[in-house]
Every structure is written in structure tokens, then in C-alpha cells.
Amino acid sequence: MTLRTFKKGVHPHDHKTRTASLPVEDVPIPQLLRIPVSQHLGKPAVPVKQRGDEVMPGELLCDADGFVSARVHSPVHGKIKKIVQQPLPAGRMSDYIEIAVNVEETQAHQWQRREVDLNALDRDTVVEGIRDAGIVGMGGATFPTHVKFSPPSTAEIDTLVINGVECEPYLTCDHRLMLERTAELLEAVRILNRGFGFKRILFGIESNKPDAIAAVSRAAAEIPDTPIEIVPLKVKYPQGAEKMLIYAACGRTVPAGKLPLEIGVIVANVFTLVAIEDWFFWGKPLIDRVITVSGDGIKTARNLRAPIGTPFEDLVEACGGFNGDVAKVLVGGPMMGVALPTLDYSLTKGSSGLLFLTQAEVPAESPCIRCARCVDACPMNLMPLKLAAYAKAQKFVEARQHNLNDCFECGSCAYVCPSRIKLVAWIRYAKNYVRVHKL
Ligand code: SF4
Ligand code: SF4
Image 1 (cartoon, protein in one colour):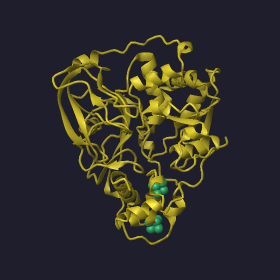
Image 2: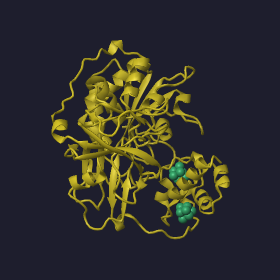
Image 3: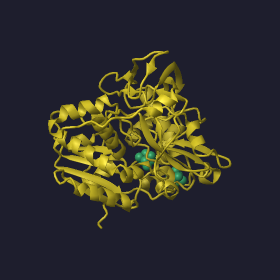
Image 4: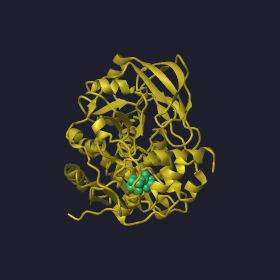
């Protein structure tokens, strides 16, 4: 089997064996949900419900505010208790809609499958459906999917790249979806192909998931009307990043500052595809997701499906509580995830992992020894040590001049750094400063 890949990159220990073979399980329905109105890149959605309103599963809670925004729906039967302001994991403030859940009625709710005439779909109806369902990039980027699938009329899109890479250590939720919802994934591919008539559909999966490669290959062989090719990839981080994956899968390079659609490519994560199938065949908007809860600091690591808005405390409880002292809590993976100061957050559309790491999994920092390993590892050819030094010295203009904004926070530099310097945290700090102060 020929394995393709991108240039540079790193090989972190994947820590996936703990959960890779564990089927997805549903959490008990929570008594209370806290649903942020801002779970995506772009403008926060606008609430269309108020305190005291009764809501049903799938009912619209918030409408998109403009084109680059995404709808938010209720995952449950319940009553809106209040709307409060709280920080999101990345630090920005957001309104949260708190719903007191009617657990019994929610449990009794059944989604009804509906007939879909694929021949009646065209690009507009496909994109409209994606927008109506509130679907965003589920790999963590949370860019509204309808925007990604609305290229300018001048763009000639010929290739869909499906992201089944899941290169972040610890995370296995995409892997499980490729095994457990293979047929639905392929149904979504057919829907997208009706709208776009791709010349090529390349499904990238790393070779450490041979069962997923086999399952998707078998299912793809049954839909001969779709030009789909499974592309086994070398195991390397950050291959799941769009630009790296596009190069690995089809050998095209996205120039700095450009978007994939400018070279004719759209990338979609496997979870995003499952959400598309859920909407078109079941009328179910994006109201729940699978998350990997793992790390040495949690008693029983699991892949859990939970309603959007589930408090993280409920996920911890579903995993049997903590296992000894937890030194660090991360939402997302250890490379690109965000450290949480408390557990007072809830599941959002972009939460792919919740990690509880012990001290042994979080090594201490020491001074820079100028080894340049961070420079060698950076897939964007940046100088991470320099960017971090500028950030520490508050020299944001200089950081910008050294292409600060090309950093997509993959964490490869911090991973290879023998001094364990928090390079990404400093770079993220500088990027936020540059953005807020419009430097
Ligand atoms: S500087 Fe940014 S893009 Fe480069 S390795 Fe570090 S985190 Fe990744
Ligand atoms: S890898 Fe770490 S120690 Fe080496 S130059 Fe970069 S920041 Fe300094």
C-alpha cells in the first residue's frame, strides 16, 4: 500500500489505544443544558426564544446572523430557564441559553427517516440544507459549512477531500464514526456530489486506522456512480490540517493567505458528513456530537455521544470521575486544544475531546537552548521561537512581520521543543492581540 503524506510534520505518541476500540455510547440525558449562541467562527447566532419558552428537539433556538454565522437548535424537550453571559473555552464571552430538560419526553422522542430523491437535489438545495441544519466544521475549526460550500462563481471546484485523518493524539471519535456510521458517511458524499459534481472525491485516512480504511473502502465500492478514492496516508501530525491534507491527498499546494477553494478543493471532516446525512435523511439538525474523554486523569476513558450544551461535569460523571490528581484539563487534543481553568463549560459543536492529564503527561518548562527543532518542525516554515519571543516582549508588529498569522496553531513546534516552552500559547496570545487591536 503506497502511503502519501505532506512535507515536515512530527510524530507524537498517539495515546489512542485506550479508546480506539470503544464503541460510541450515549450519556444519560442531562437535567440541564447550557448552549452557547457562539459555537462557530463568524458572528454569534441571535436567540429567537426567550426565558420561559418551551422547546422541542430540533427546534430553532438561535438564527444565523448574516452569511458567516450558524443556526443553533435545541437538542431536547425542555423549558428555557435563562440566558446568561459566560466565557467560551478560548476566553471570548458568549450568551448561553440554559434549558431545564424534560428528560422523559426527550427520551421518548424519535426521529423519523424521510425519503430523499437525490436526483431532485442541486447545489442550492444542498447548501441551503447544510445552512438550515446549523452544520459547522466538526474537526474543531467550526467554520460554517454552508460558507465553505458556497465558492464564488469564478471558482472551479473539482475536488472534495474528506478528512478522516484524526491525527490529534488521544482522539478517536472520528475513527469510531468511520466504523459505526460508514453507510451514512457515504450517503452524505452522494448528497454533496449531487450538488457539486466533483471530478474526484479523495477520502484521506491515516494508516493507523486499517479497520476504517477497510470499512470505508467496502462501502465506497457499493456506490459506483461516485468518483471516490480512499487515500491511505502516513501517520504524521498535523496531517488533519486542511493545507497539509490537501497536499497529502492530491499533491496541490494552497498558497499562503489563500483558501483551498482557490485551487479547486473543498475539505470536509467525517463528522460534518454524518451531520449532513442526519439532516437530509432524518430532518435532524446538528444537536449532538461524539467526544472522546480520555487521559490518565479520568477513571474510564470513553467515546460519548452527548447533546450540545451538556455540562462537562456530566461527561466526567459518565466516565466514573477523576483518577488521582489532574494537572491539566484540555478541550480538544493535546496539540491544538485549549487548557481550561475550571470545568464550568459545556459541550459545543467543535468539542472533539476532553482530556484530563496527570503531571506525568504535562512536563515542566525550562529555558530555550536554541536548538531550532521548532523551526524544523513547523509545516508553515515559520520561526516559532522568534514569534514566542516577540509575544513575550509585546513586540506584536515585529511578530506580524514574521508571518505570525500564517501560524494555524498546530502545536508541532511545542511538541518537539525539548525545553517544553509553551510556544503555541505565546503565539496564540500575539495573534489575539493583533486581531483585537487590528495591527
Ligand atoms: S508556529 Fe504555528 S504552524 Fe508552526 S509549528 Fe508552531 S503552531 Fe504549528
Ligand atoms: S525547540 Fe524549544 S529550545 Fe529549541 S529553539 Fe525552539 S524554543 Fe528553543
